[in-house]
Length: 197
Length: 407
Image 1 (cartoon, each protein chain N blue to C red):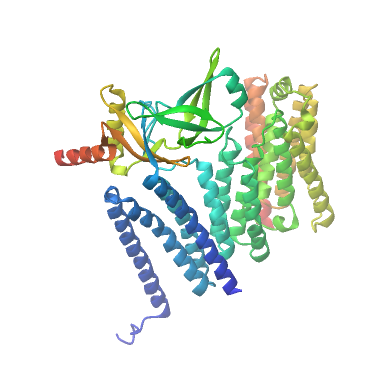
Image 2 (spheres, rainbow over the protein chains, first blue to last red):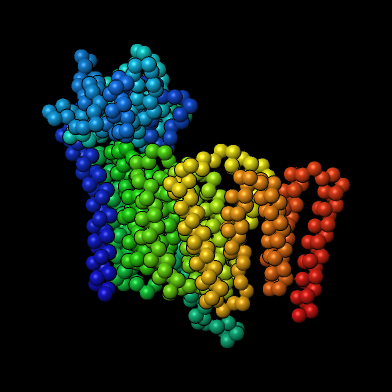
C-alpha cells in the first residue's frame, strides 16, 4: 500500500513538473524559431496604474472593423485568428480576421474579441492580444513605466513590441523605445538615480 | 549547594532546549533562504532564460522532495505531512506564475486557478493533509467567484462544481476519522460558505427567486446543524447551524419591509418561470429541506422538532403572496421574526445558554430597529420601546444568571 501511494505521488510530481515545463518549452520554441514581428504600441491610459510588476501594452493594430453583414455571421465567436503581413516600415499589420486558421503559410495568431462599437455600416471590434503584459523586475518597474509612457505620447519616439510567432503561438520577446530595449533604458535610469543619491 | 541545585538537567529542560534549537534552526534557515532569494532577485535581469527557468522550478522540486520524504519516512507525523503538503501546494503556484512571467505569457486568473487546483487536489489525499484540503476548497471558491460571476469566462462555469466534488471525499474521510477535530469544523465552515457564495452564479431571468433559493439553502444548513451529529457540538463549532439560522433570520427581517415585495413583483416576468434555473434550484433545495426535516424528526434521538427548519416554506408563501398583497407579506414576516426571536430566547433559557438567549433578544431588537426606520411611530413611543427592550435584555440575562447560580 505504501509503495502504491508513493508511486501515485511520483506520478503527481511528474504531472506537476510537466505542465509548467511544457509551457516553458513551447514558449522557448517560439522564441527560438518563430518569425519576428514588430507591433506598434499606443499610449496607455495614465490612470491605468502599473499593475503588479508588468507594463500594460496597447497596440495600434488592436482594433478591427467588420462590415455589418460579416459581423452578423461571426459575432457569436469569442476568438479569431489574425492574419499578418509586414508593411513598408516592417511593422506588423493585420490583413484579415477569421474564425478559421489560414490554409496557406500566412502567419497568424489568436486574438480575443473585446468590446464592440456599432456604426451605420460597420462594427469596430477591440481585440485583446495574448501579449499585452511585459513583466519587469520589481526595482526597475517604476522607471520602465515612466519611460514607456512618455515615449508613447511623444510622436518623435517610436515604441513597439517585438513578438515571435509560430503556428499561431505568439510570445512577447521585448519592448523597444527607438530600437533600444525598455529593460536596458530602465536599468540605466535606475543606475543614474542610485549614483545621484 | 550542589545537593540543592541538581547537576543534571531535567527532561523538561531538555525538551525546552531542543525546542529552542529547532526554532532557531528554522529561523536561521528562513533567513538564509530569504537572503538567497533577494540576491537572485537583484540579479534576475542579468540571467538568461534558461537559468531563470531552472530557478522557477527550484521551489517545486524542493517541495516535492520534502513531501516525498514525509511520505516515505515521516508518514505518521502530522507536522511533517501538513507542513510539506502546504509548502508543495504553494510551490506549484509559484512555479506556474514564474514561468508565465519569465515568458510574458498571457493568462486569466481563472485559468491559472483551475490549473493550480487540478494539480494540487491529489496532495490532500496522498499526504493525508487537511491543510492542503482546506487550501484546495478556498482556491476552488476563489475560482468559482471568477467564473461564476464573469460575463465572458474563458473557463467554464461548471468547473467549480467539478472541483467541489473532487474535494468532498476528503471531507467525508475527516467526518469518519476525526469528526471532532478543528480541521473538520473549518472544512464544514468553508464548504458551507463556498456553496452559499456560488449558489448565486446561475444566470437566470428570474433572479428574485434567488431569495427563495437562499432561504431554502439556509433551511438545509439549519437542519444539518440540528442533526444528532452536529447538535452535540458547541455552537461555534457548528457552522451549519450558525449560517442556517442567520440565513433564515436576515431574509425574513428584510421581508418585514413592504417595499421589498412591491419592488420584486414590479419587475418579474412570469412567462418563462419554468425554464429558469433559479426556479428549479429553489424546488430542489425545498425538497432537500423536506427530506432533512423528515430525517431529523424520524431518526433523531432528540425530542425537539426543528420547526424553524421549515421557515423556507413560509418564506415561499410570503414571496408568492407578495405579488398581490405586499402589505400582508410584510405583516406576516414581522410576526415570523418576532416568533423566531421569542422561540430562540426561550430555547436559550431552556438550555441555559446565554449565547442563544442573547441571540434571540438580538433578533427582537433588530426587528424593532427595522420598525424604527419603517413606520410613523412617535419619537416618544419609539424611545419607550427601546428602553423597554433594553430593560428586557438586562432582566432576562440577570434572571438567567441567577438561575444558573442557584442550580
